[in-house]
Amino acid sequence: MLLLARHADLSYSVNGMVKEPAARCAQKPKSEPKPDPLTLVLKIGEDRKILLNREEAGTLDDTEPLTIRLRNLFAERERQLAFKEGMETRTDLPPAERIEKSIYVSAHPSLKADEVNRLVDEIKGAGANPVIVLTEKEFEEKFGWLEIRPSPSAPARRTISGTFRGGLLHAGVLNGMAISLPKPPYPAIAISAHVSGSVRVSVLIDENGNVISATAVSGHPSLRAAAVEAARGARFGPTLHGGKPVKVSGILVYNFVGK
Image 1 (tube, rainbow, N blue to C red):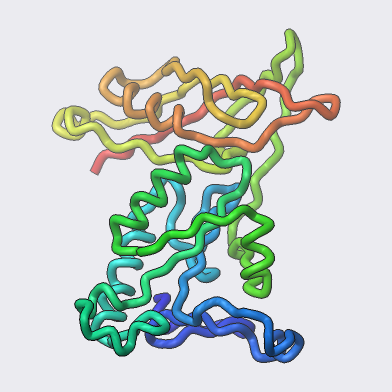
Image 2: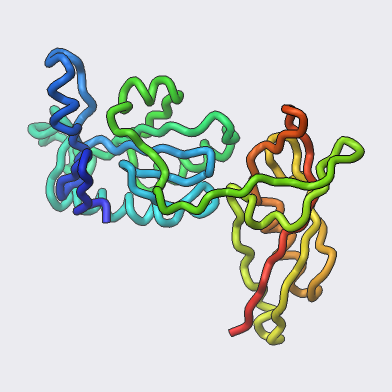
């Protein structure tokens, strides 16, 4: 939980406060401005994972863990009266408007702007205000001491390999190579009919790692549409051939296990 988490080089209070490590603070001039200790810091990596003050909080494809955490955090701050700096005496405003709910956001430059904008809207919907979007350089200058990094337990992503011909890399099954692989929902019609099994989807991936074509080539008809839709949302890193990004064709396999 964010509210009670502690790390060796970064600590949090009961109100989700960010505290700069003492050793690093000692190295900085006293006159250097520091972020408000209640401000939340959100980083979206190339792997589409969301880190909130260094803790994993979902992905761009599954933002529910983040929004639930934010709502709970802001509710706790309202109970604790964790006001913004300078708002302690503003009794002319309702307490809820005086609570610190600022979030600084930075996204990897490879991510699409519309995806980041949708996330910002969801963050605002969870109660954050204001939401400040920074470039990677601005984020590093302001919060570089946070040393935000992916969880060391994250599995390594394998490199895509295959046969290159006709300007296209022909690979095999790609499930283990994806940066992001959304799970398809189990269609209600398939559940009611007790249908299960695997669906193989042929995909074409562009030079940036986006799926630009997806077609089911096997599997029960009632499962195919869900698998194809999930495949279209998969994301891969750029694949190089001869030092240049190339398109890739391959297969994604989705297993629907009946209950």
